[in-house]
Image 1: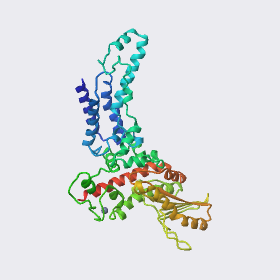
Image 2 (image 1 turned 45 degrees about the vertical axis):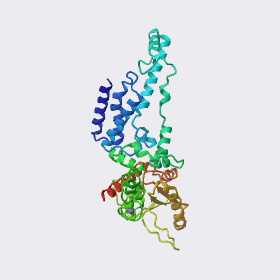
Image 3 (image 1 turned 120 degrees about the vertical axis):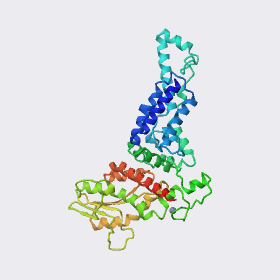
Image 4 (image 1 turned 180 degrees about the horizontal axis):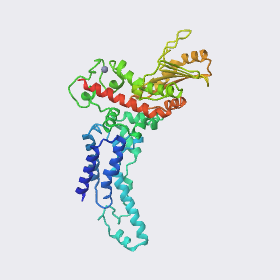
Length: 409
Ligand SMILES: [Zn+2]
């Protein structure tokens, strides 16, 4: 029976992985369609811990074979919920133990009122997975809880950085994992960004330090420093004016378009990658500037924020500046932006006779982490509904940057 069930489970899994489902729908389908082939047998057929491990490994290897899960990525992520930064596959161990526990409870409850059940409880000396004769047997105690799994993930020297930043008190976890919760990426892209977050991409530094290959770890493009994943996604001088800039501009375009639409400068929205912002948009109620140098009476060095938005009716101004740094630099970048534009804010406040001018730093890390301060800032400009679009655009850009980089030998 076990072999039959395993075969059915594997067939269903393979079948699903051949479909063109988005990552979120694929995982739902695995949970509902493939894993249910197993769960009917839980509590009836004896599955050992080793058996359950093998089933879980099967999910992982099947997903790896289609590049939906990187072989070097943290395996803890596979069964962690998507709101915790995982992929959200049902934990087969936990499902098994819960089901056994539920069935045991059922038999004990019935045994109180029905003599036949009482007899069954008495004679089941480990003949069935329920092991009813042993009252102390508690399968539920073996359940892995997500806090322990996250701790395991965090403790890993290479994989642990991303969960560390995701778990910081200043991080908005809900915003930072919204791309996973929505699950709109291709499964392969989702697997790829997770490998980037887990820092298991085959960079030269990884090949040298982890795979012990005899090659130089210097960056293949700028030849200046070690080619780490952080270097590729944020630090390579050869990408600064092209790929990093376009990743940054995509975020700016999403926000600009939303403001332009709300202020009725445009009637219809286009996908952000096709949107071309106008440098200056003026109406009786609003002013909206894109990447424009503001001339001031005395010299101010920082005079070119990405977006300036002035609401004449409410006499408020916003200097919006975007950055996509490494997770480790995000909070510092936020503070730097505020300090950088404070002088310009004063100047514009006086000149436009406004009540308030606010510096709005929109900082999202290149692997998709939002700080709580940033989601607050997005709320201040009425753009909190853009969090998903912003994070998706950053993640897709980061994936594109790494793919393109690795193609060059
Ligand atoms: Zn470089």
